[in-house]
Length: 251
Image (cartoon, rainbow, N blue to C red):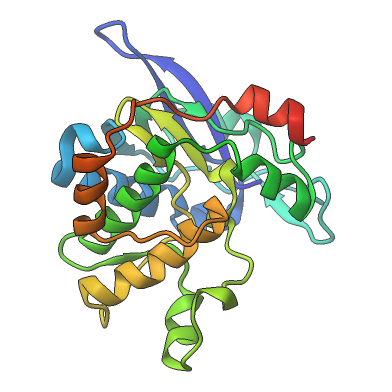
């Protein structure tokens, strides 16, 4: 509802994804810029273990908020102000980020519906997928200079003594937010990610592991020691979920 995604061809021939804002809210809150900063830093920190980040450009602001149209997003009960399509497709105006072209686990929010469907889908996650979820939790918790949290409200819940079972409506518990990249299964939409200045690595890892555990419908142990033990004694192939088959069985 907030962004447009383009497939683009880079100068050396590789195809990639360009993301741009399509609403006033996205422009005002700098959603693409925030996401670009996180993806850039993750790639610098983890290199081939992160989503490939090719760059970003903050273009002219002239005319970016002219000729807006207010309309109700599909399935919602509120209005968003949408930019003129000519502005959206003009890469010389506004912010653009470019990342690798990867495969989303689910390309549309209507492919799996309800708790039962999502629980069914999670049964098809492979050992490699579960390890990828642990990796995401650790990478975000070890983000430099400040840990990243997959769901900001978890900080408040944790202070009140509430654990992962109180995770609410963050989109990051849904497979639609994740992609199969060259690095493996990774988190592809960073809108609902924030820095946690009061978090230690350990506290951030507990919070992030709670989110990916909800996603996997599995009480995961996200510590590095646990992953090292698994990979040493129970090695598994780098094979990820067959989403097409999972959708067929669970829809």
